Image (cartoon, rainbow, N blue to C red; front, top):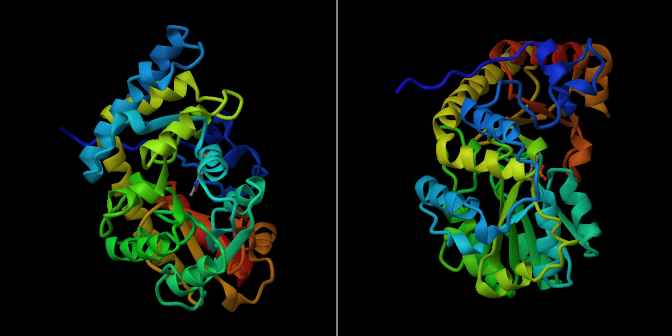
Length: 383
Ligand SMILES: Cc1ncc(COP(=O)(O)O)c(C=O)c1O
C-alpha cells in the first residue's frame, strides 16, 4: 500500500484552523514555537471524528470498563514496543499534564520531585501545583550528549527526593533514552524506594536511528513507574483532550480508580474516538510523518550550518522540537531578538528552567521550505 501523503497547509489555512501556534503571532511573524504541526490531519482520524460529529457523539465519555480504548491502546503498545499492558491498567484522563498532577498527588510520596532541566515548561509548574518541592537538575549546556545526571539524581534522592518526573522521549533535549540509560535510572530509583512518573507522549515521534523504550517494560520498571501516554502529540490533536495513565501495579490502579470524579474529570468522547482511530489505524500516516520529520531534521541541520554557523545543537533523536544553543551570538533574550528583528517566533530557552539560558527551541513540525525560512529568519535576527 502506498504511504499516505502528508499534506502541507498554507499560512491562511493554518490561521483559519484556529490553533494557538498560528493565531497568537502577528501575521508577518513565522510561527515556530508551541508544539503543534502544520499539516492536515491523518484522514483515518479526521474521518472517524467527522463520523462521530455527524452522529452527534457529544455525550459524556464512557467509563473505561465499557470503552474500547484501553484494549485498543494495549494492542498498540504491544505492536509498537512489545509492551504487555493489561487493558485494565489503562486509566483515561483529560490530558497528560493533568495525568501527571494526578500521579504526583495520588501515587507519589509527599517529598521533593526531581526534574531534569531544561524541561517542558509546565513540568516546572505541576510540581509546585502538587505541593511538592521541585528539585531541578540542569544539563551541562556544553555536554557532548544530553544524558541524565545519575550522580545528582542519586544525591537528590539521598537528600530526600522520592520521585523523578521524566519525559522520554525528552522535550526539549530531543533524546530517546536508551535501555541502558533507563536501567541505570531504575537502579538509583530502587535504591531509595522512589518512583518515576514517565511522560511518554512523544513515543510515536522517534526518528530513524533511535527507538522508544517504555520504562515500564524494563525489569523492575513497572512497579515503580506511572506512564502517561496520549495520541494527541504524534497525530497533532491536542484539542481533543484524551490521555492514558498506565498504572504500574494493582495498588496504583486501585488508587487511581478511587479518585473522585471532580479530581479525574474524565476525558473527551471525541478524543476517545480520535485516539482509537489513531492507535488502531493511524500508523501508516504516522510512519509517513516520521519520514517527513527525518527529512526536516536534515534540512534543519544544513540550514543551521549555513546560516547560524556558531550555533550548537545535538543530533535530534525524537520529537520535532529542536533545542538550539545560540549563546555564541551573545543575546540575553535570543527569542525576543529573533522575533523583533527576524519576525520569527521560537521559544525562549529560559522558560525551560535552569540550563535554558542562551538557547531557543525551534519547532520543525512543518514543511522543509518553512524550515529554511525559519532558520534564515532566526539568523537574520541574531546575527
Ligand atoms: C513532554 C510533554 N508532555 C506533555 C505535553 C502536553 O500534553 P497534554 O496537552 O496532553 O497535557 C507536551 C506538549 O508538548 C510535552 O511536550
